[in-house]
Image (cartoon, rainbow, N blue to C red; front, top):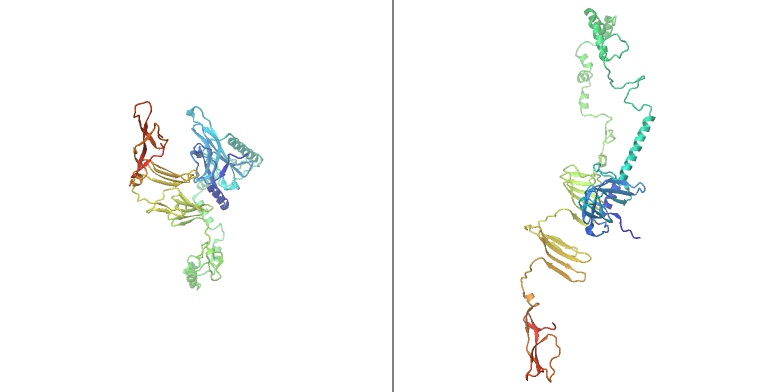
Length: 520
C-alpha cells in the first residue's frame, strides 16, 4: 500500500542537520506549527520554507529519542481545548531561528472551539528518522505546562529510579551525614565555635579561647606589680641565667658598628653591591630576564625566530581561520561568521552551501546555489533587470501614494501569469493558457489611444441591401439563401394566390465596407 501520510526534512532542515553533525554543534528544535493547507491534503515538499496556510504555532511540549528506535526523533505538541476552530492537514517543525526544519501531512481532523459546543485536548506528534540524533538538542521549555500522560509517567519513573538510587547509596555509606559531628571521638576541621562557659571550678566543661584568655588575665592581674615586671624581663632574655656572658660572646669579632653594617643587613641592596665592587651588576640586570624564561616554549639560548603558527596568527600567504571573526567589533553571531562594525551584523554560514545575511541579529536573507533569497524589502535607486535569456525589467521613481505589486509567475495550469495590483485590489491580469490562448482581464475601463484599430474590426452599422423581386405564381420564386429576409408579398389580381415576393440581404458595415451577413 502506498504511504499517504509521512514527514520529511526540508532542504534547509537537511542542510542544518548536516552542518550541525559536521561541526559537532547542536540543532535546537523549539516550535511546532499546524495548518489546514487551504482545504486540500498536501504533499510534503522539501523545498518548503513555511506551511501552506498556517493556523497555529507554539513551543514543543516534548522532544525525545524514540526508546525503541535510536534513529528516530519524536516531537509532540499539545493543543489545549480552549483553542481551535480550524482543520489540521499539515504539520511543521521549526528551530530556534524560525527555520522550517521538517514538514508533514496528516489525516484530516477538525479541532473545534468550546464555543461550538465541543472541545478536546489534542496531541500532535511528528516522528523523524535522522542519521545522527546527537546533533539535535533534546530540551524543551519547562514553562510549557501541558504534558501527555506518557510524558508524566516517564518522568515519574525516572524520578523514582533517582530517589531509589540516592537512598541506596545513603544507606550503604559508612558516614552519610558528613555535615554532622559524631558523638564519639569527633575530629573538627576549620574554625568550629563553642559557647564560652562561666568562670568556675568545674573541670569537665569545654574551655574556649575566650575562657582561657579570661582566666590568664585574672591570674596576672592578681600578682604584685614587681613580679609582673620581673616576668617580662625574664621573657625578653629567654630566661637565660648567663645573659651578660652570652651577649659578649655574640659581639666578639663582629664588624664595627658603622654604615657598612647597615648595608650588610640587606636593607640597602644597592649599597651592599657597591661595597662588594659589583655596582655594574645593577646596570646590567635592569634590562635582563631570568635564564629560565622562554618565548613560546623556545629557550633563550640564542636568536629566536617566531612564525605565525607560533603565536596563532594567520600567515600573509593565507590559511584557515577557525571561529567567528569581528571587524571593528566583537562577534555576537557565533559559529562561522564575520561581523562588520556591529557585533551582530554580517554574514554567517547557516548550513552546507548556505550563507546567511544578518542585520542587528535578525536573519534578513541568505544565499545558496539557487540564488539570493531576501525576507525583507529590497530598495534600489534604479531599475531592476534580470536576464539569463528571459528579460525582466522593473523601474520605480518611488513617488506612488499606494503600494503597487508586480508579479510574474506561472504553474502547470497556466504557464505564464502577469499581475499588477495596489492597495485597493488588482488592476491588470493576463495569463497564457495551456492550449496557447491568452486570457486578459482589467479591473476597470480600457481607453485606447487610437480607435482606428478597433474601427476596422467591429460592426459599425446594420442595414437591408438592395431589393430583389421573384415571381412566385408560375415562376421560380426564391430559394433559401443565407442572409436574406422576405420584405414583401404581392398579389396583383387579388385572388387567393401569391404572385411574387420581395427580399433584401442583411448587411453590416465594418470600416468603410458593407458586407452581406452570411447567416443569422
